[in-house]
Image (tube, rainbow, N blue to C red; front, side):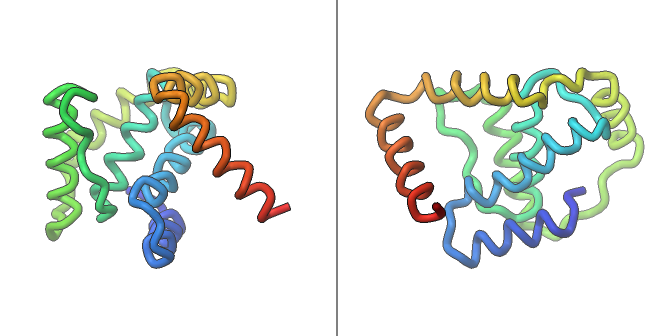
Length: 149
């Protein structure tokens, strides 16, 4: 269950008209924090990101499932299920399943949320995008920095 302040931050992002991926970023950030605090582990940074995105969809963030060809059919159908769960009146999850998932995640490594692991994941992800998109993102980051500075 996401913390109240995370849901609040995501809601604020939505009111400001920010993209669903930005709203979902709050949940992903929370997940990395959980791994760092030792609440549970993750096999890889991608798993921590996936958990965060799933929580975001279930909390009502209108984040569409990944497009065909990007991920497996199983991942897409799970994302669709999460979205539906976020839109419907949610009922409490099974205690037995919840406990099993928590215990499994507790056995995983904590190093998947380290700064180096996350930055390596970000670089890998950026490399998949074309140079034009990377260049655009860098220019936007520079503009944002200039505004803040």
